[in-house]
Image (tube, rainbow over all chains, first blue to last red; front, top):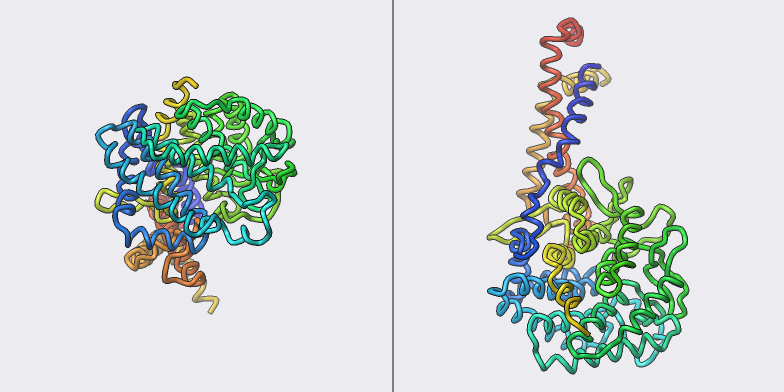
Length: 386
Length: 102
């Protein structure tokens, strides 16, 4: 009896104290103006990948083996991170712009040489797209956002045509549907991509003097009317071109969408954030994470979710993107607890001033990096007059 | 066999047994860590390391994670429990201690 009681007592002391050993100092994960130290370490690792072709080939190959989308999204998050870091630290701007240009040029080249399916999952070839010639909002939105972010840091006139073409293509595809729903996969439209597209369109408007506010407002109104799940009040993740819901709300979509929506309708984004926190965010003994699905939903697993750890329902994909929304809304308590979980469970590895998380991958780490530095870009866009 | 089980169980539930388990878990963790199995934890995000089959990666990732969580969760708990039990046996319940040794 005594040994069991000792074990229980020891566990009762240790487990609630554990988070103190992994809790980061706020200054290491948050800075209003400069680049937080953790971001410097994570960025060093990503920059080394983009300056060392062999290392990059290996890292991208292991992600593409599971999901080609991750290769693409890792590029987007890194370009966005470098744009934010350039705005925070002008001394590093020249170096970061160079890497951003390399990534953008290689991404556009790969898409041009291999077609849209190169960065999509194999089921993109399973049936024809509803709208032809085939285009994917997944690619158009993120490439446009990368270019827009780059140009917000420093104008590069060679990119004007590419950004205009992407925006025109996205607007054209959205307008073909009464629900303003453009395909990312055949008859499959994703909230994630539409939110990215709206952010990219808003940035392009600021840069090139166009005005798509009516379209953006119309999309928000349509989303509120047709893309909200009744049980949770959260936006669904995917739907058809006619607005028929496919997947309900998911952590791996909603958190990023909230961040992008903040740029075009902050009130709506905040409402979605509060709802997502209630439905998906969980905390225990100083640790926090995100579930992938609300309690009301039971369904098949999506590869974007990564592994979902049973019982606690920790979703790797959902938790990774929760950093972005928490940072975007400066929810410091949730953000700090997410970082505590990250440093406890994602197995950080520091080497030569570089930080990576062994339980993550390049896209996960890039999303985390973005969450550490985001802010100045959205602020600059908001402060710019249309 | 039952006697052996009882003996091992009793030994594990003594302060010395708890320390021994802590050492065992720590050595096992150090072994898989030095073997570089930490990188296989990327499987948690659905990524399979290059040069590994899914099966091999899954086994190594699971082994590493069990050892890691054993090291950060179980080892401190066992060591703390060993101290508590030692104090309890020595100062609070000498009779129970004698009985358990019997």
